[in-house]
Each structure stands twice: as structure tokens, then as C-alpha cells.
Length: 411
Image 1 (cartoon, one colour):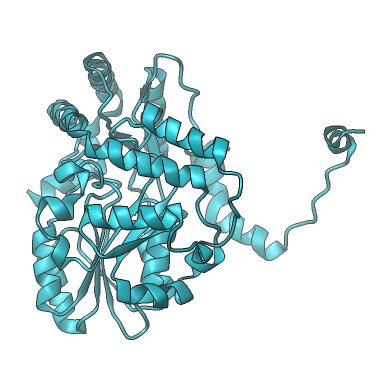
Image 2 (image 1 turned 90 degrees about the vertical axis):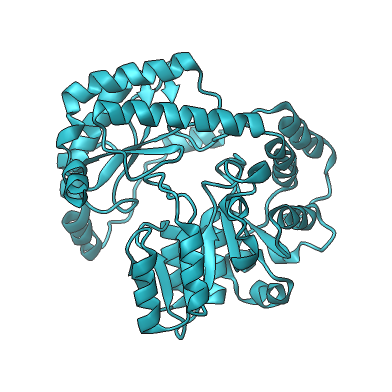
């Protein structure tokens, strides 16, 4: 009898969940699951057809499937037979992973860096080491969840400052003293660009370290795609740059920069680095090849900017409240989850697929359909998105969304 046959013939019996857990699920989730989501997970909509326009991924430069990247991965898969899967701390200095860490650090203009399993692991593992209970952490209110989790892992006092508000940060740092300032360069829910020069000035004035998560600007901004810090000439004033390499690099990894003097200490205290396995050789080879592609992608970056300018302009003219952002991420913030799902369904029925974001990725009742643009979108695809958005606007009335009223109040 095969394993599959044994599995099919077995009676599946699970031990009962504790009543305390059942009560918590009922209190925190049951109504949401049954009433708002209709017993279907919120991110699961229709299955896209062959002619669907995908605005639900993060491959901004459309590098997936690039021949040079695929060939680099295939070469390693075919010829590397001796690799030992182990924790990243066991990777020797001459390993492909170590070599890529150095190459990426040099490209970014920093002393060194560390590869991680994900952007989440990078932020968690770095902040866990560089902050502690005696160091206040000043975090932009819309910073990525992984940054907040890093602060929690460090047991650092967390102080949220108003989104993209250097003056509020200045007042908080004056009150609580030197610490760690944490921002995203481009915010993942709204596409807002950080006023990074002003933030760095405030951090420096108060003797703070600063960490910039460049997940959504690495590859898309700056010379050769080196990011917003490089674009603004701020790299030498920023202590740490972190990034998910699952965006423009379209890989499965994360990365952060660090000075040489910190590396030995970090390797003994950063739990994600110690207790997670390293990247596989073909993944490292793919990332290294991707870096070369990104360096040569000025045309794709320009195309992405044109696509962004065009679609943002069209949506704004239709009454969609997208003024909070400027970059390739566009937030259609319908508000309540039931309204967001209606928006998602209306878009997908017409062949446009974005990504639903809701709590905990957003604040409660501030859920959204996020549209992420890429350099491969054609004029015909953009025209289709514009036609669909115009049609959907008459149904979902974005000029009546709560975010529209809030934006009017601020004006």
C-alpha cells in the first residue's frame, strides 16, 4: 500500500482545541470570518483568466524569468552537489552567500551586509540586536509590521510618530532622548515617499541612529536602482539600510547593511540568523544575477515611472483618493472590509487583480485594494485598467469613502 493510499484510508481525527482558544477565536475573529468575509479568506478572490491584468505582485522591474537569472540558477542546480544546508552563521567568508553580501554592500556604498531568509527576518534580526530596553525607538506610524516586531523583540520603548512628520519626530526625540529612528523609504500600503532628508536631519540633531527600510525603493530609485538613500546622497548618514529582496529582486531573501565592527556581535545575538537555515546556492546565484540585471535597467525604471504617473493621474481625475502616495504602489482605501471586498470583486469581475490589505496589515476599518505597477505593463493594459476603474467608480463611489472625507478635512 502506498503512502497516498494509507492516507486516504486513514480516519482523520484531530484533538479538540482548548475552550480558551475557541473563545478567543469567537471573540476576535468569528464575526469577521462569517459576516464580512463570507467564510472565504479575505485575500482569496477569483481565479485570474489568461487576459487578466495583474497588479498584485512586487516585481516592479519585471525581472522574473529573465534568461540571465534563470541560467544562473540552473547552472548551480546542475553542478553544485556538495552544498550543506545549515544555519547561515556557518557560511564561511568565501562562500557564494558571503561574496554576494559584500557585492551588495559595495553597490549600496556600505561596509558590509547580511543575507537573511526574508525582509521580515532582516528587520527583526537587526533591530533585536541594535536596540534594547534602554534605547527608545521612534517608528513612523505606517512603518512595516516587521519593523514594529523588531522593536518588540528588542524590548525597546516604542514611540510612534505621525506618518512622514519630521516635526513630530523632533518633539518626541527632544522629550525621550537619543535612540533609533525607523522609517520606510517608500511605504508599502500607500506608496508615499519618506521625507528622508528631513528625517535624517532630525535623527542626527538628536544623536539618534537611523534605519531605513528600502524594500520598495531598492531597484526602482536612485542611480542603477541603489535606492532612495543613494538618490538623495544620504547613504553615508544612514546607519542601516534593510530590504526585502522579494520586490524588485523578485527573490526569496532579505538583506541589511552593517559596519564590520558589528558583525561578530550580531552573529551571536540575532536569532533569525542563528536559528534559521541559510539561503540555497541557486537562490544566491539568482540574486547575484538579478543585481546585474537591475543595474542595467534604467529603461525599465523610466517605464515604471511613466506607468505610475499615467495611472495615478487617471485615477485621481476619476475621484479616487490616492493623494497619500506618489510612487508605484497605489492604495484604493475603501475603508470597511465589506466595502473593500466589494471593490475587489468589481475589479476582478472586469479582469483587474490587485491585492486586498486589511488588519493587521492596515488599521481596522482602513482596508484597501493595493495596486502595484510594474515596468512590463503595456499601453493596452493600462487603458484597460483605466476603463475598469472608471466603470467601478460609478459603483463603489470613491468620492464617498472615509479616506476622502479625511483628506478634505486636512486641506
